[in-house]
Image (cartoon, rainbow, N blue to C red; front, side):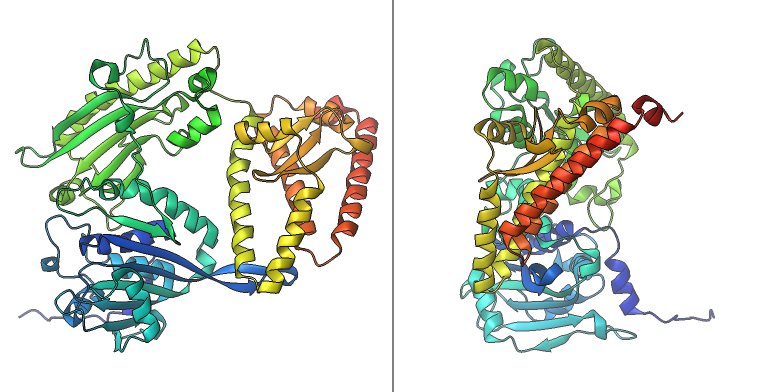
Length: 565
């Protein structure tokens, strides 16, 4: 007889490990949201809760407090809670179209966000009963357990905010892992952007086995977003891409819906669709929208081109290359969709996070020529459209820096708004007043506002600035902060001009100037000192730095200094 050994299991370490299997906060929250979808919810409310903590110089700062997902699904009884919190939920609880796979999603996703998981739920079979379970990772060592307690009035009110008097569930994660999580504003904005793509079919009511779904993130409705934009494609042959004559003004099909075989027996299949999105320079030339607006609307850029893989009508992989879509800016408008169901899970080796797949040999045999031809057509169409508008795709380093700085600036403004919102009323009003004065002190000109709104120019090079300043900040009341840089200053004429061929260095310089303006604005806006005094000191500082840089540049032999001789 073999000697059966049972080595000790440390569930506390297991839970910690589950939280590190590849989740980011957005993927974790939406993985928990999958449970709501599987529970036939028609309404899901996701909330990223914050609280006020004193930041630098005693200023209010919105800090993560909890994550909450509330739905009006079928809910759970005690047995259902047992199954939901078991390490590897029973597959018998999953229906054919489930978004779950390994029975680890709730535990692993929650463990990546915080230390304490709470479930408040009412079962569809008897919504007069409510249950609350608490799984506190900090209490778990050698034994794995959770506590079943009576839900409070506050818990029930939270549940009923979505489920009314019927069945539903609240998932609340507290004691967030602040050291490993980004700012609340970043999580909220990415949730709003990604949820519309991830649940596109559900939000549109296009899933055969499910009712139309509604999702809110911090109270804002999530709109469905089709990354392939098939609804904008013209009917008939006009909707098919001709790479030689494509005007670049609207999406086209490269490959209409086609079923491909995934296994040798032909029992399991997938549906593949490929489209070509508009060419921003062509759109900008005809004036239907600006190039920047076109890129925003169609998410054209690095990180968004490739295949969007949907499992049971839920996105599991964003812009995957599948090994066939190379990194190439000429493919920025290339979009593919790979639609599978849970029957393909084992065949495609889908991982625990349900975010990556590995194609079978049969699938590869069919996809390789199909995608190869599609990539070829997409690249040719983009290059031809570029030639037609007599413009190369690659933009100046300043354009690239401005586009990234514009994204960051908008996020910083949202963070400021969130910090203000958690401040006590008196402090909130004080901050609002200081912000209004800081913004109004140096307004943008109409021309500057146009460049900011239409071309995202956060760093604007101007002919001159008063008193030999090298830079100064300005504000558009709606679009936000810019920095003016004096192109006539000796430092700009001699030193920056000498490195014009170094694209990366030019981007670094733009970032530096913007950071100087952002730091100045933050000092005026958030400091306790008199804003008029700060403005005066900052103006003198800019003049002194401008004068010092002018003198240093004059005394340096630029060619020898930058030539490294």
